[in-house]
Amino acid sequence: MLQTETVHHLAYVNGDLPGFLNHLEESFIDRNEGAFIATVNPEIGYAAAKDKDYYQTVSSADFILPDGIGIVLTSRLINSRLKSRIAGYDVFINLLSLADRKKKRVFLYGAKQEVIQAVTDRLSTEYPGIELAGYSHGYVKDKGKVAKQIAAAKPDMVFVALGYPHQEKFIYEHKHLFPQAIAIGIGGSFDVFSGKVKRAPKMFIKLNLEWMYRLLTNPTRWKRMLNIPKYVLSVLKEERVQKQRHYYPEQIKEQSKIDL
Ligand code: UDP
Image: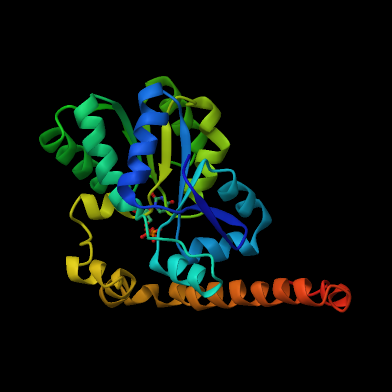
């Protein structure tokens, strides 16, 4: 069993990438058991805190990964101590290697047509053991049609790169059609894998500054990034109310009406 730590009502995997991959391989992939993996950064955490339906979608995942140093650092502010970030892109790359090694069937869904094409080209040259079960770009109007395509392809792994909240909602609504598959939402990972977007240099990743690199190289993201401080504040606000509940149970009755 993997340990979890809860931050803002979401139970995150509390471990590291190799430990998580081992668990996934032994307890799910090798047994042909499916699983829904949500990769959550502060933006997603904040969106889930604001939208009940989206919260239910994300919290239904079998594994919620802390895909952002913002989640890890925030957890430390409330003494919940998540050990490390587990980045969606790293899980993606490692699952591709595993699929290559074990000759697994992979379905890719998301990104623009030219991007997904470049991803499949790279797969066929660098991961010859992978059986490409199918793929679709991410701008098909009828998502149900793609879900049926996935079901018919019977993949072992489904990578959904539609950005949030679409990717988590898609998996949540359709996972019953591909119960044997590991299904994971991986945001802009196809853009990076295809070479269209560069991942941060190793030094940025090591210093936990990948978010800053993304902001510098794509300044239009600044608006989205405002959700990071909003997320931290909302976690701290909730923590303060919880503590008061603990120490002053009577007086807090009135305060419990506070809107979180
Ligand atoms: N995307 C898509 N369909 C849509 C909207 C977005 O396939 O309707 C893709 C988009 O092309 C990009 C990815 O979803 O490849 C989202 O990337 P983003 O950088 O926003 O995600 P993040 O990694 O920040 O979650």
